[in-house]
Length: 449
Image (cartoon, rainbow, N blue to C red; front, side):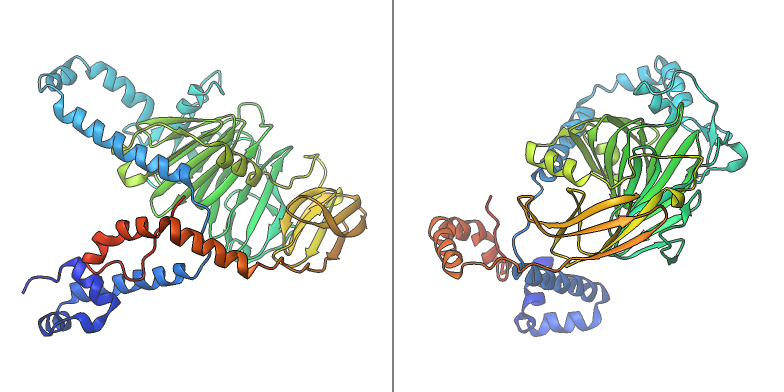
């Protein structure tokens, strides 16, 4: 017999007893249906786990981007299909010169060198003159023999929380970070400062490799999420984040790059960045975001979309990074900075010198002197407070007791559930009715906004 239909496998995945004798016999001998059934059962288990969790904040800007991308991609496909056939030979002859020019500008030459990043940088007005070509292999690993390297840079950890390793080893907060370093995070995050008011933060469950780190070019390769804040760059210095097959070219800005399993998202809160795959480019100005599956880049609507007010404010707040206010290239960092070690409950926000920094246990590099550490609530009201007096190169530790978490009112929760059932119950049933007919509604739920 043929393979079992997916919707039937879904029912069997929820209730194994629903399979008839023929279906059970087929499953015993069909590896493909067994594989699909295992994945369906994993999905059902995931839905069961979600059902007992609190409702998340929905990223409507993400949803809006996907809807726009889907509809625009369809329109672009229809437009290409409806294009008159006589355009093709015209493009092949009249457009040859233009296409050759584009190839020289954006594509790798026959010798394997290219100038994509610099060309994109010129588009945002950052460089006034070309500085020669940079070689790279297909994996975008820079060939040092073809680089016009500048003075080497080093960064320093300004903040660390949770599971973080450098080059596979346990974290040494005082070690300097240079080219080739690999920062990996588990349930943790780290901020690396490399200049005055310039730093990048590696988010949880991410890996970042510093492919180039000098006065002429900084190149970071990310698999996960990285936040970048560059207020002051060295003259003529390029800053590029490589995410899969794409480059994000930066010149004085604050932005976030998310790259996981072929999907890239770039959000900008200040300045402007350019996202390119070597052929096309997308400008992402402040207050906008661009998101697309890498595999579907050519079919995507190549433009960024505005972030709504709440999303932009949340991103701007999340982008703030702890940094030393001054940066002395000629003086070792450990000679003029101090380190604060904070131990607190994971649910408690800790403020240092009146500025909310992080929750829970973390390490923070700060100027030497007297520092106030305090627990703050959602309204910014200071709770328990401690003071630390730290000399240059000194470490100090602060322990702040956890505050009792607010309790929920059971009566209020029951009342709200009754209100939702009365107002939305029938609508939910109508939405799920088509799924119920196919046996797919059991264990599912609807979200209303």
